[in-house]
Length: 71
Image (cartoon, rainbow, N blue to C red):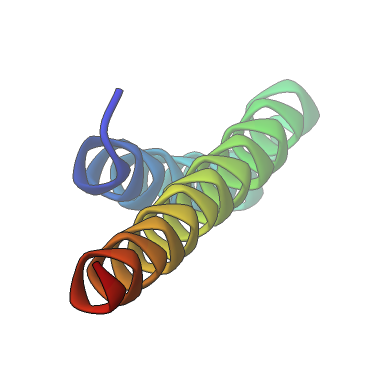
């Protein structure tokens, strides 16, 4: 997956997780609250992966540009 895809999926999972937690709190469902917390954490991880991929790509592009200028 690309960095943008990771970030989009991460955001969606975070939002869904938060919604599940809220519904779980409102209905008294500990199971739904737990599922929501796990999904929110998963989303945060996906977003972090997207950020890391983007940083690596940016660094690689800068190194490549610098190498081409020196040739």
